[in-house]
Image 1 (cartoon, rainbow, N blue to C red):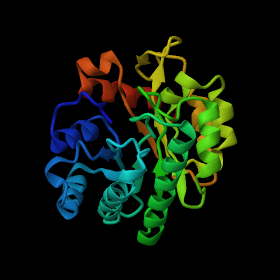
Image 2: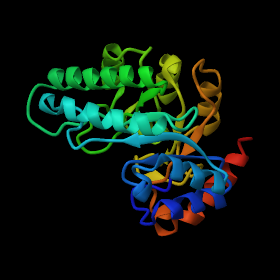
Image 3: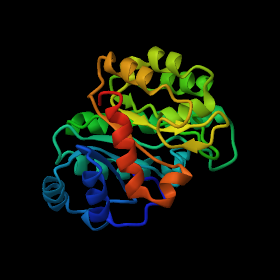
Length: 257
């Protein structure tokens, strides 16, 4: 992925990813553009670009933590699950639970887990694996190891997988390798992202992420599907997203990927 500040349309995105030397793509609800209700046309565009749809990612203004929005969030989940079902092997990734209102954190964890589990059941019925993608962004409910332990204690591992994002984990966890190893059975695919020692986004290989270790842990995870998705939020990438994805692809070749 090219990051949130990429301003092109979906076809520009496909071209940039394909030109960068990648084999697959994760698309989001904010980037799908004109293909939003046209999975068959999107499949044609992917084929033309030589790309596979790895996952469809989406979030919610509710942060998946508002009880009164559970129904709406599940309708949205079903919409994207149905979209992803048109692409063999594609997953659906749900964004991080986020605090958007006052109230006890306990309640927010319970609501988020309920949404994730119910979405996971919708995915099971459709033959689509549903995953959760914790983040370190503002007001996230899923920041540090205690938060991960808590949500994973509530989410059914048979219904909901995990997309570990190395950059977000490094910002909130003292030992990323231990977090990955502890919950490796939940790993479905991986977001590779780097940060420097202060937690500022960095180009892959320019920060503190032990990418080789991450690849080793993921590779041994029993439910890992083999996809490493590179996502960029660094200032370097913001200046020239297309060049950044090419640079990152070359970096990955150094890891044998």
